[in-house]
Structure formats: structure tokens, C-alpha cells
Amino acid sequence: MTDENTQNSTEEQQEGKWYVVHVLSGQENKVKQSIEKLRENEGVDDLVYEVAVPTEKVSDTKRGQKTVVNRKFFPGYILVRMQLYDDEGQILERAWYFLRNMQGVMGIVGGERPMPLDDNEVQRIMHQASDSAEAAKPKVSYQVGDSVTVKDGPFENFEGTVQDVDAERGKLQLSVTIFGRSTPLEVEYWQVERN
Image (cartoon, rainbow, N blue to C red; front, side):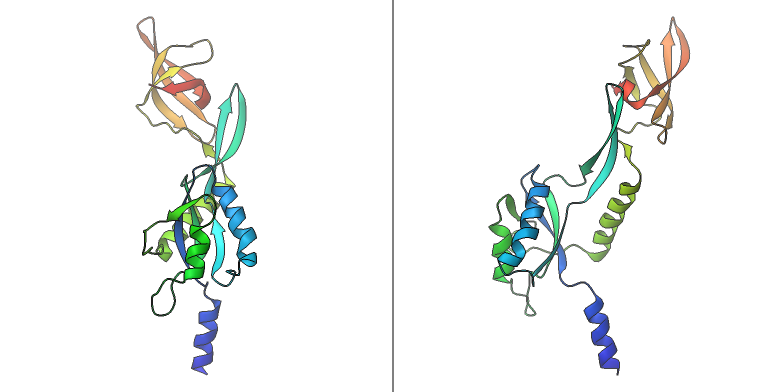
């Protein structure tokens, strides 16, 4: 009975390991779609299981319009869950050549003997991607003490120092010198640029 329990728990675990695949920058989603589309046709669906392009939502404001875009965590890289090695530790040629010959793929990180990502690292990456999918964070982050120049509004071209950051609202409290006196000023992220 313990053998059946052990076998069931092994079957419930995900097959394969996650590997980092180097692709042409800007082609991450295209390569992902190609892998997903061709894995059945090429007969490697028993070796290549899943493809991920970890992204985060980022808010940006241009010309006063707030937009939310998906930004890749690792531009030029995708994650592929696959069975790359057999039980003896030899590379499975079908999976290896399927990926290496895919248009847009530069190679598997690790060269001739790629090492899979650690399970904890994969969980951290996937958790980070799922957290950022819920709430968009600003494209540019500021810290107290940063020196900035106001690029929009009545105080355009004035330089100031960040005194407080309100990331939720996307606003900054600045200290700007006007006529030799320090004056507090509240601006939105998009209204300033870092010096």
C-alpha cells in the first residue's frame, strides 16, 4: 500500500524541470507561442510541458494619460518546463534539438550541460509575477533624497529633492528652492525626471 501512495504522490508532482532559454530580445512571446504550437506537431509534447514569460504590470504616464503595460522581468529570456535529461543523466536529443532549432532561440542557459532552476527560485519568480499581475507599480521608482527636475507644470525646469514618496497614488513631495527659500511641492511621477 505504501508503494501505491509513493507512486501517486510522484505522479502528482510536476514533470520536468524549469530551464532558462535565451531568446532574441523582443521575441519572447513569439517564441513562447511557437513552442506551444509546435510541440505537439514535432512529437515532443511528452518532453516539453510548459513555457512562461514572467511579466509585471507597470503604470506609466505620458502626456497626462496613465497607461498600464506588461514589462518582462527578464528581457531576452523565457522559462521552459521540460524533461531535458534521461534517467542516466544524458541529454534527450529530441527536446534539446527542438529548442535549439526553434526560430528566435539563442540557446539554453548553461551551454552544453544546462542546469535546471532551483524549485525555490521558480516559486519566487512565479509568485513575484502573480503578485504584480494584481497591482501595477510605477515604471520609475523614486526614493527619499533623489534629486529631480520638474518637467511639467508651473514649476517646470525647477530642481528639487524628494522628501516623501506615495507609491500608491504615484505622487512625490518635493522640496524646491524658490527665491532662496525651500518650498514644498506635490507632483506626480510623470511630472519629474531624475537628475
